Length: 472
Image 1 (cartoon, rainbow, N blue to C red):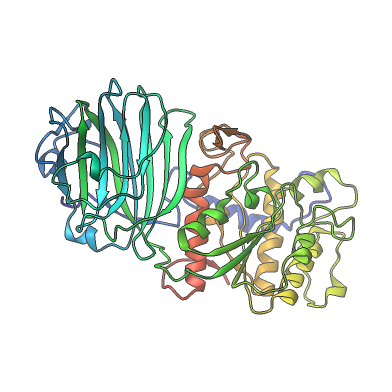
Image 2 (spheres, helix red, strand yellow):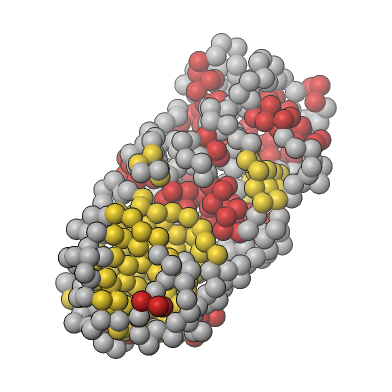
């Protein structure tokens, strides 16, 4: 299969100098439009929407396939236990990290039929599979090796099964890491408010992406495929983070809100890192001069004394509200002294410095990484800019690395479509839903915006030459 075309504060107490605010606003004006590609990029290897016949014809499937009506149809008029195999080219087979997304629909009408798709390496080891009967959607990351010459029951993948609506389209997202032998996957309905049906990370035996296999296991059922996009992340860790330890501190954006897997979880799962998460929903940075409950500094003090390789933290999202509500709590400014006695812990700036100081004192060998969160439609904009001025100044002063989601990703929940598609308030079927207030990223929000930025920063700190990064 040849490579397709490449594409390349509201209250007076919140004080920011006019110069600093102007610089920030100018940088925002010069930043990519939210609809454009972000700073964390990828090289597109295949992008096909099937608006016309492909080259090679029928996306490389020799039998049982056709292109028409804006989709690729496979397993057409195929017999029981038969396959049709499209091979990826040698360049794609040589890639060690790949991201794949495609839309999929089945026309299976009864449980007496089963068709599916399998992705395998050249030796027949499984990478990922999806299939359906009339009442069940199935997926797998493990199963017997197969030459893909046929699809008998004995060579079926080890399916995970659940009920589904066969009238709907589904979007499949895969992050394949052949260095570590892992795939991170999600399957969601393709609609205005997508519902996640499955999400996880699994160990795989596949060591490359070589074969795209259309399988007619039994019965008759055409499958439709659209919006097929295969890309190589330009900022992959290449296994450099495997085995490293990471502590995560902060608020609900780090914790995951009502979902146990936050964005640091997704990075740790992908990269084989040992994560200990101390973040707490509702946590604030300050004021640490007040009660200790609910402060990120309290999380740090209660954490293990054993030093991790990395400390990842956010902070400021809830302070943006507290600053509006709590009398006497001000943003303040980062001072020149490193003496903790000089920190004004009644302010956000002093509390933020006290938190960083505590991390450095407790784990002097750890690498600290601060994550400025996305542009929030749920918080006052001027307050966000003022907090950003302080946190970036403190990070520079203390030598803290920055994984800058605010600047290096395009997620902006002031835009209604972003808020609806990428944030959630509650769970649907055990997974984050959509249509949130704009604060908490759902699986798509984490995967598309947070995970690439944090992975790139950690990889750079681990010594992988991954290109543009932000911060110290």
